[in-house]
Amino acid sequence: PLLRPNVWAVGVRELPLAFRQAIETRLVESKDPQVRQDAARALGYAEEADASRQARALIIDPNGKAEAVFILLFRQFENPSQRPACWAWPRRLVPFAVCARP
Image 1 (tube, rainbow, N blue to C red):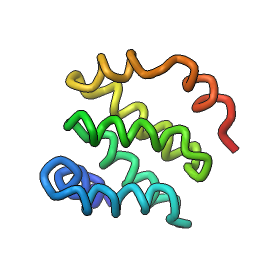
Image 2: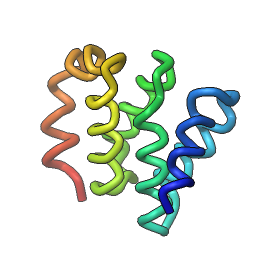
Image 3: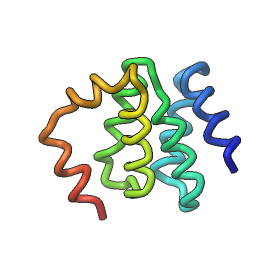
Image 4: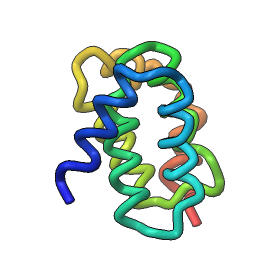
């Protein structure tokens, strides 16, 4: 179980955009909570600016599940290269991301 999110994280960082988009789809559409959590972990490790910005945009996706959203956000904050971008993330979205989850 611990191998999949790590392999996906490498793919998110190293493979073409289509791979990251497939992981984003798994995060939003999968009915399996473990798959959603693994996708969130992988996307949380995105370092390229556009990839990490897109990952943070998924946090406010109304189809996202809370457990996955918080994992993704935590991983983005945990990464020193993404921490400044996370803090600069529009504050108006934070209450939505934290309080308006289904």
